Length: 384
Image (cartoon, rainbow, N blue to C red):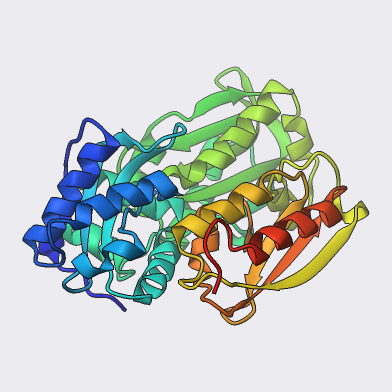
């Protein structure tokens, strides 16, 4: 576990360009006694080799191997840019973590960082917080964003009622049992009229009392009328962060396609939840019916898969349509999405580690061959 001091966190920073941001961060690292003044050149050169944007609005600029002599001791400078910095290729960075590392220890640090910030809700919270303590706590993993609560305890089907207040109460009970709302939320929902979304579905929420993001859904046995509109179901949302956005997007899709009634035809809670939790993989066809190829390769890069070779690996993977995962067999061996730079860096692969590449799709064999050649060639670096 790395140590991050509050004095190394800089909130509400501004910069007119990526270079300006990196120069500010390098200056902060130097002022804190982590690096010499020449380290900034290594940070800028690293960006020329391969941009250090990880995803979810987070970038991790650091120096090159040649400028390690400029590092006095391992340290960090965390800058929050609420207005965002263009990090190239349309990528906007809101949290920029400058890293100074004396040896390959930065791979372990990067791995820990990416595990902490892989949750986009944590990243969003870090980007908007005005508390140094909160940002540090989130970054160190001491505070976590509770995942969206929407499971079988939050759904009640076929309630025998013709009163919308009964639906409100059922949803409130579900939200209260999950500890997602406060009394302010309850008062607001009970006293305000829910919104009619159309096609017999209603929505209630509150601007106050949202403790954790959660969704409660109730449907009725027989349709009834409220304020001259039909009622088949009520959704009540505790909106603590953007985790509920996907659910609302899918509701909107059902409304636009006039398929809300499909929701009310479902008489199994698990099936209803699956309707909203299904992931869109954006694949052109069902990969289960396509070729699957798996091979293992050795990392030959002297300093492992740091940002530059990881970027090269991701670039090669993105050339193919197949779904591709990468596992570090000398790490956790958990497969990660090969199209995510953040996930690849999080593998913490060092020189000599074994990577398992799995591809599913029409061009799986072609992808494996090309990716294997790229890994064996050093991913743009001299091999050990």
